[in-house]
Image 1: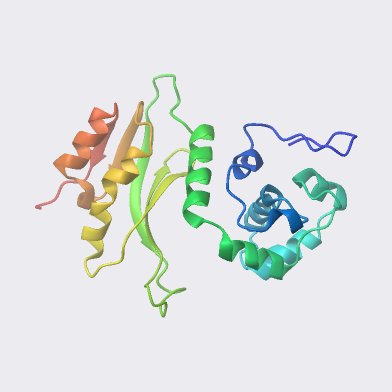
Image 2 (image 1 turned 120 degrees about the vertical axis):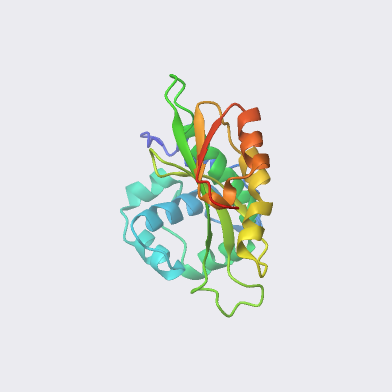
Amino acid sequence: MQSPVSDVVVVSPQSLAAAFATIPDPRRTASERDPLPAMLTLAVGAILANQHAVVAIAEWGARQAAEHLRDLGFADGRTPRQATLQRLFCKLDGSRLDQVVSAWFQTVSGPPGDGTLQGVAIDGKAQRGRLRFAADGPVHVLSAFCHETGIVLAREPIIVTADKAEAEVTVVPALLDQLDWSERVLTGDALFCQREVCAQVQEAGGDDLLLVKDN
């Protein structure tokens, strides 16, 4: 992202801010001062600075220099307050946000293209501690991440059931469909060592390297 001398902010078409601009704004945009891409980019910067709570994101933003905030898209050099951020995050389409971020990461961490193989691991994670008492259970996702970069390339939500392993296996096809498997090798534990999983990766141009147990 560049900050020219004029008041116009030029955003690279390959930037994360440009990707955020494709997400529908759930607010009444005519009455909103702060652009959605600017607010989401601010949140990313704060999270990278280890500010995870909404109040921490708002406080971190308020501490930044006005010229840097204008670079992010805040025309007046001021950031939104906690309540404004909270309302936005509650209304935002989480699935659409996840799709946009995953697609962007794949553009900056795609297959090497030089014949070098890239490892992609899949694993399931659940936020048990944070949402222990939630009515619909913890957030549970199956993720695919790149060995070389550590970047999460794609995620697929999992419907919580009594059998965690079975629940993870059911969403594997949808997760694999999100990725370009050329010059990539799937890795994972024995849970994913199944004919259907391996066949899907190989048919998409990839390879697999999985643990085998007596199952």
